[in-house]
Length: 443
Image 1: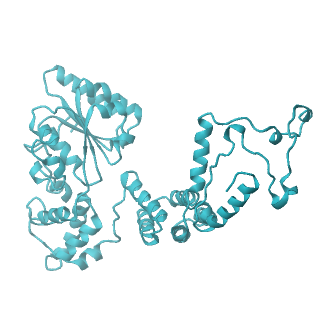
Image 2: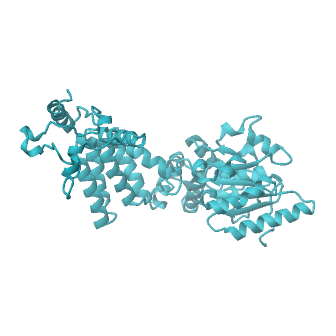
Image 3: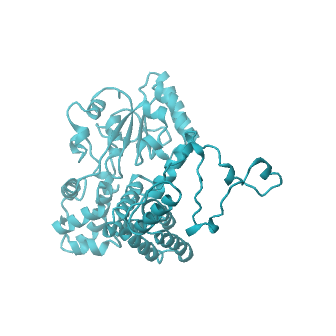
């Protein structure tokens, strides 16, 4: 088969798999009626059904969703009997994309129908590669179907996104995955009833696979051979013995990466130490870069804990240093220690709010002139122009606080830092109130 030769397909456009193809390929839905989940896209009159029902797709399509939710299957179904070309953004380069577009234009000039080009993991294409697709999509030299696990708003160039219909796929529900496993056991395309699937074993596969249908079918296929030698029944014991380790539903390059780290940070911020450790464990098992986790903890220690417990930043930085020094898997221990400490620490974002408010004032032009008595007076002639004149040395003042104006005149009386009464900030707040009284700023 050369680069431009179409695959053998069923009437629906889905490639006819060989008997030796992986179970996930053999069980690929041949029609929308066989698609599990995605009910929000499959209703009567939905854009997806109209695309599949029309002679020519109305527009190019971007399919966005987690792994194993049916993006490739839907691409084949949308293509129907049209010529279908599949490219992977991981391996295809600019030359490959240009070749497909040129060939499609040549075929159109000969009166043939347009080519449907499916690009898996389109978010991995560079901006220049995506830009090459723009004239081809706009002039309908090709019909593009792109699949991505990352938010297209950030990973697909705006002009290409605006010329495409965005369809968002959702992760499958446990019941959907369970039903798919039972279908695969009985269907002649699948295991053909040669083995039975114990309910506990099914539930274990569903739990490990998460919302990923492909992963569930791959796991089922991996345990089916063991069951054929054990009375033909896939049991929970066989499933657990066959799996070396639970395959965590986590894609380091996709939305799951961002979702899990987001849940991790929000759990620490919310002081739920158990949830925080759960998400930390998911990242560790999935092989997330421990330095990335450590960096997020350092940021969180300043942003969400701040002066309510200044020791939090010390602990987070120590964990980051320890991870860099000892590596993994031992690095999980200081990461867990820092996670637990930060989750249980009192919380305050007032330092974070204070600096952002001050920055906003500066950007808005509220910088003002530095008071003359605070200006540098260490060079010849400075005193002749009043620099440093009247400056009060704080260490000579009562309580070490010199009552003089420090802010520019345009910001006199402005307050940026307002501590909470959480943890150490309660003490700092009391001291701040006393200082402000000494400076003549009231409370």
